[in-house]
View 1 (cartoon, chains in turn green, red):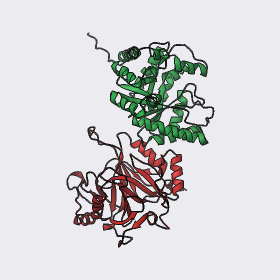
View 2 (tube, chains in turn yellow, green):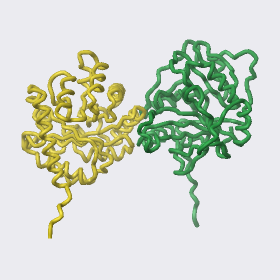
View 3 (cartoon, helix red, strand yellow):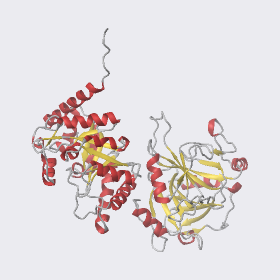
View 4 (cartoon, chains in turn brown, yellow):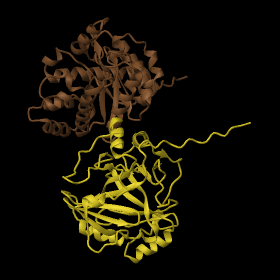
Length: 282
Length: 284
């Protein structure tokens, strides 16, 4: 589960996630620096929870900038990497830039992603690059994959988010073109509308109306995505990336239990496929 | 007619030209200094403003830093690389994603730029090694020491062994290849008595780095990333081990790492420091 789905203080979120049977948590930087007792206390709370940190998010608008904007973002990236390491997370999520100041030249984007990956090496962190569906130049999963391939760094890979993929009505067959070893994280969510036509609609939906897989109208596509990734050999982490205003005003245990029910639905779908066929009596 | 194309020399973007010095940190500089003297190093000079000593043997400079150090077991804390232009090397690596290191120089001391390496270690860049010695500026020589103490059995820097976590070899190969121009030696090509991990050759062909992941099945062993030990090259291992044994150095003499014509490994001293001797083709 991701802490962004739940309301309340960090400790309560961690407890609710653990009580619902989850063993991992995806953490947001705001949870850590916004802790009333400071970031050191927040990090201690995460460590004390016994939950493994799936990843840390989110570095925004890093690539494509120049001059002082680039230098500023490098400082931001270094601070995010340091927090990521302090939390014991080995994955930092970096979203494709939505900045109007960012270049779209692939040469520039590749160079910046290489730099980010190099910054992460001494800290033992992998960069999971994700195409935001409203990214200015990179907004489709295959575009992010092309850049990751071109950058060619061992610790640079992809985060695939079902929302951003489905919001563009992407044909899931394209997943087969991605080297599964370079998928560092998969984020799952469903959402409540059939279509999101404009970038503004996608932003609005992504930030307020996502639900757990099985609760929206794209359930079959989310299952299909998981099934395809499983078939391709993906054995990495999944996380629910569910931004939902309602969930942030409901009891934590209730929301965490809805997440658990979603996991059950997904695993039952997967189990049916994965189980070997019973031998039939003659 | 065929034209044989020359094999292109690997790029050396920083103009790396060997190791200028290796820095250790320890809170017990005297005990470590005694060990270094047994290993053939001579105490040369004391830093002007901090608790740092310079040792030398032949072409090797070794710095022992005890300034605000809390751990007693000596650790390899930094590698100083000779480069064409230290400022340019610093800017080049930082531009590609290295973490810059804040300067520690006091007034009238040399500013030696550097970047973060593995674990807590640093990589310094030194360019003024031909026309004068950087140590003449920051260090006060000890009385009665010859400036160039000879090396025992022609010992010289051969390389540094770096411990890395599981599945991290590819990450560190990227780091050393892309930032510095190191090249990977073919699998199975090793020097010394510890044929493990991956060997990288410096673009100047003057030293090596060995990356070692934890051995399989050693999940319960505490393993963290860092510079593990230095390798000292020797043209004749038997001669070198004999000379060092006479000075009281003890070598591991059992199992795979017992002294051979390939190399030798000292016992563990001061809670965790070892030196490796490696049969060397390098010209110091």
